[in-house]
Image: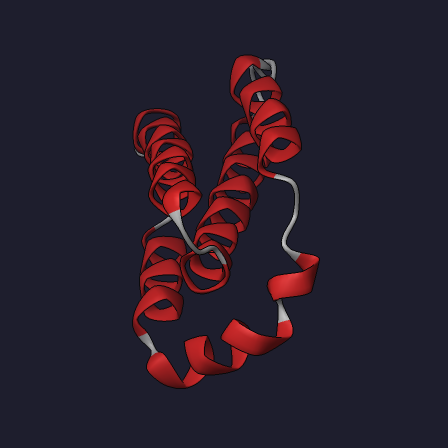
Amino acid sequence: MLRIVILAVALLIDPAITVGAEKSGCSQLPDLSTARLHWAAVRKSRVGPGHGEESCRFYSSNFFEAATMRQAASFCKDGVDRQRTLELLDAEINAFNDLIATQCTG
C-alpha cells in the first residue's frame, strides 16, 4: 500500500515525467463522469471474506488510475473546469486511500 502511495506521489511530483505527459496524453484523457461512476461501483462492491488481498489490489489499482488521471488533468485541462475536475479527482483519490487504509492494513 505504501509503495502505491509513494509511486503516485512520485508521478505527480517528477517534472521530467509530467512534461512529457502534458503533450502526449491530453487527447486521450478519459471521461471523468464515466470513471467516477465506475469508481463509485468499485467502492460499493464488497468482496467476500477470504478475498481481502484481491480486494486490496483492486482498490490500489483504482487508486492509481485516479491518481494518474489527476496528473493528466492537471496539465491538460484549462479554464474554469480545471479546478472542479481536480477537486473531484482529489475526492476520488481520498476515498480510495481511506478504503485502502481501513480495509488493507493489519
